[in-house]
Amino acid sequence: MPTRTLPQSQPTSASKVSFAASPQHGQILDIGGSCLKGVYGDKLKDTLAAIAESRDMPTLPDELLYDDKGILIWNQIISIPEFYQTHDEIALFDLNSAEIISHVTKNVTIIDLGSGDTTKVDHLLAEFESSKIPATYLALDISKTSLDQSIAGLVANHSGPDAVVSCGGLWGTFENGLDHIVKIESPRLFLSLGSVLCNDPWPTALGHLKSWASTLRPADRMLIGMDGHLVANDKDKIWAAYHSCDDLFREFFVNGLKNANNRLGYTLFEEQDWEFMAELEKEPTTRHRFFIQAKSDIPLPEYGTIIPQGQEIDWFDSHKYSGQDVELMCSKAGLTVIKSWAAPNSKFCQYLVRPKCDRGDFEDHDSGISGID
Image (tube, rainbow, N blue to C red; front, top):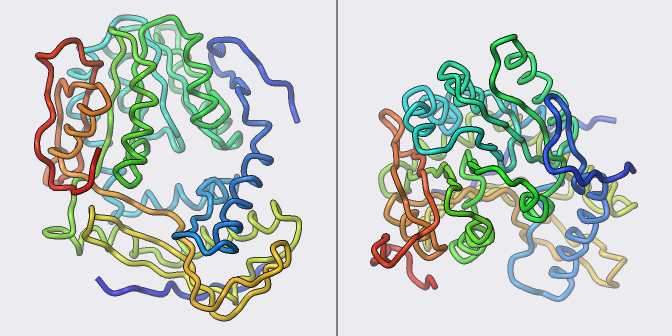
């Protein structure tokens, strides 16, 4: 698939951290979210250092994209008809929520990793309500505003006299979440929706999955959403998902550049200095890639050098893995796939997994991905 330049847009002009295990219905716990600005600044400086030292492909932090304004733009993007992942997961919950729930224990705590817009997960929570199975839902996210809005909406849907689902938020990063979840004593169901947890190159995705798998207890379960569309058969569908609203994507990235400048304390990323590009790769795995490319040499005063013309900086990758590869990744992470479901007329799937119990569980098999560990 050839690269593509996104259209030009018009120029536009600390709190205390809580250590409770679970928030009350409608509340949001700060598990590290109030300290995020410093973390983002460090990641951004790592990107600039990679450029200055001519290291392999530098990458801008995704977190720069998801401030209060960015979240609103992103919610518009994922709602377009061509962005099939959102619609497919809603369909999967409508079809399979009862079966998913049959695999978890009563009074389970559901932890939604990188929750974002909670509209689709409410289709799962509705099944808990209709089945009268008590549960606690916790949305983990880096955007406080998004959590405020999402939890308020969920509370409105789960506060009647017969409601059995309690809803709250955890404000922080995945790292904060890993530290915090050990305090939750009830059985847990972890949700990785929209390809969140495995949306990385194979070694990185496997490392993330291993981190969460290491926290699972025997009664815990994880539901992993993963896009299985591959370039070989589905390149037009994948491309349309990311290029049917180019103006929105450009607004999304321009807002992220402004956030980068705010973190740096000076203006390094001027919109007119960069091309917003995209391409669809086939090897080593299917990846849709957004990146920015310098139109000319850009001074990098902090390092006494320049960002050279033509320099590419990765931003917002979307990796796709087949069912065989997801099962292999889970196996290598110490997990067993209990059941998987494909959305109707789609290759977007959900995988319900548990910790491996013995050698009789799924063993490694050959993969179409080379160079994996």
